[in-house]
Image 1 (cartoon, rainbow, N blue to C red):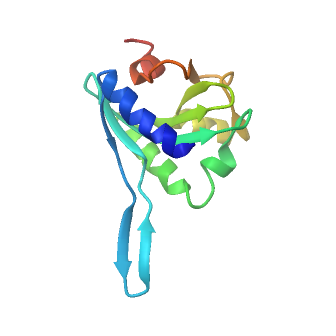
Image 2 (cartoon, helix red, strand yellow):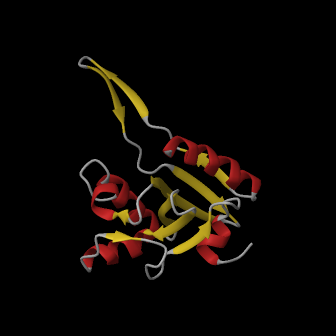
Length: 149
């Protein structure tokens, strides 16, 4: 499902006037073999002069599990990059496709950090400060982040 979401993100964002780049993982060849170097985030985008960095997640559950999908050891470097980007006045967070619910969520990285500090283990479309849209419309970060077209 993630690959399908990745393709849709690129298509929809370009169609809605965003500049978008998918950041692929790099393959590094060493004497020990070939290794995949994880990226700091999945996408960089721009909309009306605003830089946006985000990681894309696909979730088939009723809630999005923060511990396994954001804070596990292999993913925490992405969270740290997004915090750093946000601290440099960029928009940063997670674009989450909850495909069983037919929703796409935007979760700002500082909201995710606050939820974790407060012991919250998961989120959904009803979580405070999480923006959502039906997944039957083209993804528009302007709508999700600022409520504007």
